[in-house]
Amino acid sequence: MPTDDLPETFHVTTDEQLRAVSSLTRHRIMAVLRFEPATITQIAARVGLAKGSSSYHVRLLERAGLVKVVRTRKVRGVTERYYAMAARSIALPDPGEGGPDVLMRHAVADLEAAPADTERHVRMAHLRLTDEQFAQLGARLQALADEYRELSDPSLPDASLVFALFHPASREQAEGGAE
Image (cartoon, rainbow, N blue to C red; front, side, top):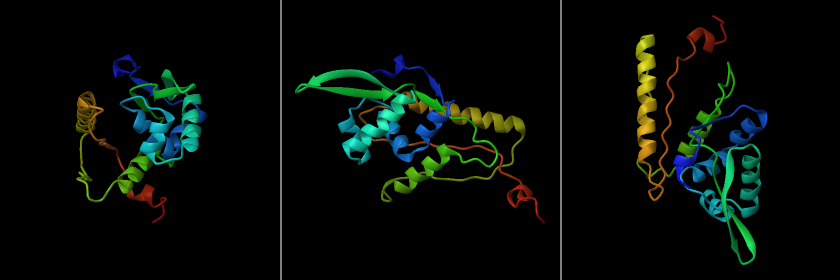
């Protein structure tokens, strides 16, 4: 299914949707479906799950509207379903003050699970920026991610790009205001 047919963004707005994307297993299933449709069997093989577990997680994602069946075919009398993402990207709600950032937790888990002998580019930089510089950098990072998403080829190995540009809590906030 060409990604041109998909809506640009799926906005997670309900508790059911948030629960669906909060699972690391379902996050990994959505990563499999990001570029091309796959069957339960194909998903199970790529994620390293039993078919029954894959089916369970895909059903939850489908019920939440995050994935959908894009085609079916008969194989030895059984209907095989191909699932794909419901949109090109997913927008999560702001976690709110003190709330867990699901996306960053999944990114760290994926990074920790990645083979140690593969090339990685991980960097953290502490910056001091004006509000205008902060906004410009955020826009440039988003544009760069969009540019490379357009270049993605499903026949190539997966690569993940995660970035976070934010104002950290002040020292007083981080320590709970106690001095």
